[in-house]
Length: 67
Image (cartoon, rainbow, N blue to C red; front, side, top):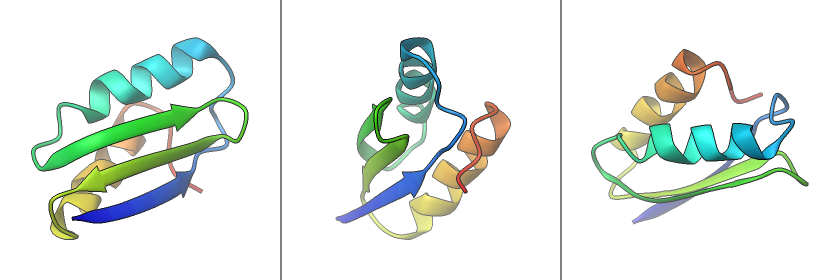
C-alpha cells in the first residue's frame, strides 16, 4: 500500500472536498481518500503506485489539479 498527499490549491469549500472524495472513490485500486479544506491537501492510499496516475488524471478531469 502506498500513501500520497497532493497539494490542491483550488479547494475552497466543503463542496470541493466532498466532490473530490466522491469522484476519487471511483478509481480502481484506491483504498482511501481524505480531502481537507484547511490545508488544501488530498491524501490517498492506493494498492500500488500505478494507481497514482489515475488519481492525478481524475483530479485534473474534475477541475482540481494537483499543484
